[in-house]
Image (cartoon, rainbow, N blue to C red; front, side, top):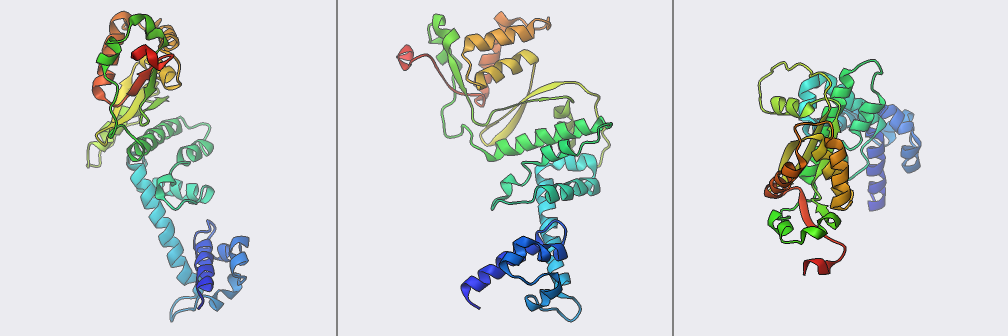
Length: 297
């Protein structure tokens, strides 16, 4: 067999076994027939039958193994969601997802990227629990994406002392470059605590779904360990504005608006503590800059 013939057969087999509707539909699909115009009725001209299995049945073994592997890989990305739903229900969701969003990348990193969107698209309108599951899936995807993405491990992160060295008259014009691994997430349900409870035990415990309660979460990474932080609404607003590239003055205005109805917040006192803590964590900011580099010389 010539090399180009082998390449065509391999690409044909991939098109057939990965078709969401099965081997017969895959063999009859345009993608497969453009490579080898055999069709489902003539599979044995390409794949010989065995003593006990037809060509379609032999190909189905590979097709089933393909989807089983992708389902297992998706479960590794969403382990808490899988335990919350149960393996059978979770696998059913993932199989439906793979039919709507088939894997098209050479890397498995992108496999679950559209899973949250799929859950939202297929969400039953009268089932509040689905919002909790979608929030949980969003949290797990961000954790996975942060773990596998760029971080600050090879860079010097922002030091709080460097802010104190700058003339306070210039602070309002400062812009903070947030860490590339920083994700800011707001959810309808308090899924962060649920994630901690389920992830922290190997036992088959039953944890009831929490009631709706908005939650703001920061996810980042330090020393290759993903960390999660609960944020108050003013903290979330402040970090969101800074991440968008707004100067500190604009970000503080939005933060103050968010803090108006929260008597526990004292911005004059709390801001110093927030920036000091975020700096000590070394996973929130990369550096700071102003209107020109000369300001810091």
